[in-house]
Image (cartoon, rainbow, N blue to C red; front, side, top):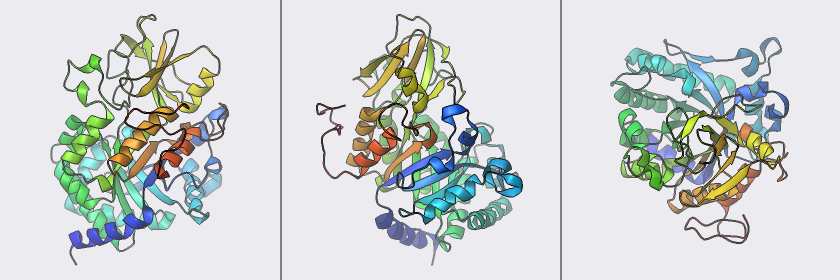
Length: 409
């Protein structure tokens, strides 16, 4: 039986069972965050998501898989055993699938490039991947290479990545392991990095990172990092017109990725800026760089939803619904943030359902209001999103994609 037949059979078997997927990344380093931002595996509600993705493991230049923080990931010598604890969620009533993600932004391309462009290393990696997944009882591997042909990569990565995925799939199928890929969203990035039709043939799901489309490091003006559509202030630049969900998903669909495999990536955090002029607060206003770091994530230019909703409680922030791009933003003094709330997530999820996409993915679970500090209960964004994803009809409180909405936000 050839690989294409095997893949077809596996896709047929997996699809009806899994239905609409809700994939939730877990940034394992959050277990080291301070104060109310400290997040442990025990804080996870197993029924929230259909899949949980452990981030991250690493790849060596010889095709070996390594854990990046043994004290955090493993039980040895008094370690936290985060991997074991997350995998144990499979034994709960809802039995979510547990995957592990390889790569991430900090990994860059050097080791990926070496492995994918050498046949013997591809074979070794596929063998090692199966052994690692079976040892730790994962259900599959999420490939998060950011990005082939970029950041230290070479042109041959595009072809090599597909060759690696094919070897992985052939090795995985006999063990009923999932193979998924997290990918850059925009046309320019995706065209340079992926053979989209071939990618879509091999993997079970494609998680499209439709966020971080505008950041303080990439833009001289403030703007939402995950808007539904382009804004008028972006009209002068063809590249900026790509930086939205509709343009990105439309590109992937037209490039040969079937809706049944595309998963819409959604953020549980906002991107922040420092306003150059405090009186100019609308998207497209001048930026003086990234916003202040939050107390938990401690990264300039970004705030978890849990960090921002606590700031909103102070009453010092002005929150605006930006109708043009169907997303909210807020400002206080010289600080500005574009973020997502229940209303904007509802619009995005209704859009994904309208197109028949496979489901939604979140980066990342530990930046929702997981403690329920802001007054809407634990995990307000994830729980609202799950309800909308699985709803078969519009009910009070659910915002329609076509712009209609009921009296509630």
